[in-house]
Image (cartoon, rainbow, N blue to C red; front, side):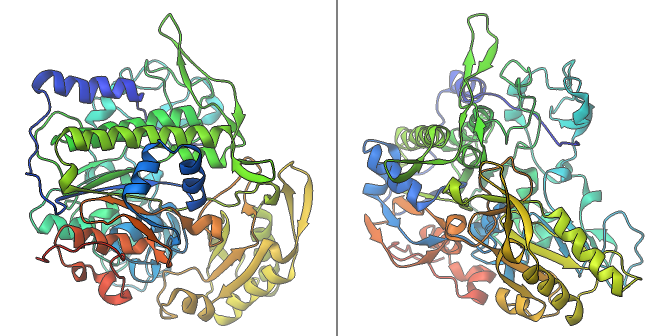
Length: 597
């Protein structure tokens, strides 16, 4: 199996290198803004996977926690919904633009477009588009490829070190160097990007966006911007026409890279940062330290004094990994001799206790971890005298479904796709591959080589009229009706669902909502995200600090509303966002506006 990887270090090690070293040299940089009752900084946190029910449970069982304090002193929105689809890319893009896929054009991190050409295929400028993959994900990283000498069957993985210093077994000698990572346009292998048929040039991830972003608006107002996330490719949040320069300080260590302990030795599980929860916590620690440095008025590495950003933040990944893993280690343990090991495997996901569905040990540990890190961030805001001028927003790009493990049914989607293509080929011998692309986590998306009405209806009808074979949570075989789907939209129906013209070219030709609990793929996961069931989309959303009153809003809101709310808090006009103008995205209720510039 080919995997894409890089490296990093623990929270403690990162603190020693970035925060500790920086403070030892110069102490904390003086805050760049005076105290004010109006916000001058917005700290945005996405706890990927976190449901409103997770927040309710955690606050009830940890009344002295940081999350409880933020909830009690801030404004909580108890019926917040993510974008649809709810994958990380459209979910994160919604937070940054105020738009859903109909205006952003972002339906998934791995998608297809009938308006582009396939990367790597001969192209003649000006000829009609032939259609091609749109993959803005970890394979786009321009990282050195080295052999996995621990487990050669894994093939190769990218190794991350600014100086190209590779350890004997293929990882970095000094994982602490990750804090010096500088993500920019040179971070990418542009040959993997979709191609513009008009020019035959690769389309950078920021230029594929159909909407501008909060970073563009804030940057153009002369204010500093920063963001930390799990992929370098989320530099897309810079927005179209930005040349990747609207985010002044982007830090995106690749989560799909080789997970290594602080001494540079790979974890004994020999996997990436997204499949060992102890490693994911370590990985999230780098981004926490980046934000701590930024609160201090420095860049993410802690080396340069630049002033605290107006808009900045990060995503947490540890909870999402804990929710999806059947079993994993929660803790990295340092031995007396300086080497490391991991704690015993524990069950991931949720479990039934006393008739209630509650977080299992790994999810509970992940929530504890997130809360502790939020505590560090909040404390640093207060220590640096920024409390009266900072608003903290905590939400999630996506949820996770199913929460109840007894509802889980994993369905291999490959046989379904193969059967559809074979059935089409029988009556269309010139077309052996009708479904050319798609991503099926806990939703169904198919892009077709023939997107005629006949082809659309053929796939829709096949999915609805056939059963599929799957496996329950105990890996016992089961049969599901309608290929595991609760509803299917195809062709004009899919276009109408997303609110776009039929000839838009970006939306999936066939789109399906799964029956709750269906996850397409192998049986290694307890849950997934991307779909449109409640577990996928009903996430936490709370605002605390300057510009937000304390209270509870029970009316439905969407995470798209975070973007115009951030601009409103900073005194900038939300209507500078194209998605706000087109979709009518409103500022969240209960937020105090500044004078708009």
